[in-house]
Image 1: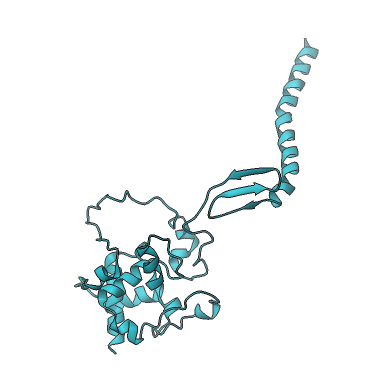
Image 2: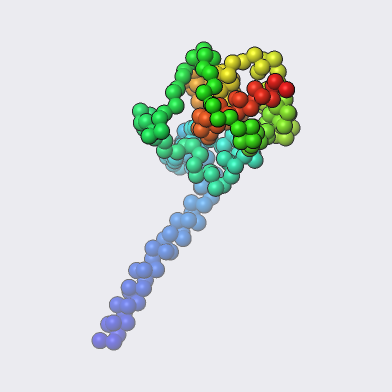
Length: 222
């Protein structure tokens, strides 16, 4: 009886040990294959050369995050989980506080007037410092500390230039919301923005973006 129990117990241990052994062997066999494979972040297409083709999660909206080098709080690890791709509210849902109106062309934005009646210089200055100064600089001339690191694509706009001064409040609001002129142009033709400027329509409240417009006007008038 004792011998039978021992053999059964030994057999049971072997059965428990077998999957671990198999998993270890598989890991050792596939390690060089994985390192020899490739994965397209934008399409999800993955392959192990000459052996297998399959699909992994794709991130067409962000890919390798284009603004991960920014010092803004939005891109810190604590906020990373909130960045796209993420689940957004249904497109036709309306918050209890009301929903921001959407416009499809620059001409529609151009006619907007600043509805913000509670402008606070200190708050607006802080919004600019946190979100805009890194690119547009302390004097809004497009010479922020990130500029020496940019080696391709458009440089930050000089917000003190004649073009910016002559833009309407609504146009400035559109550029802030959609990622600059480049981002807005892409949205108008149904394409994803490739602008280095973030779409602050996804990051800041409508009121905060209008505060930035007002702060910009105040600085331009000096």
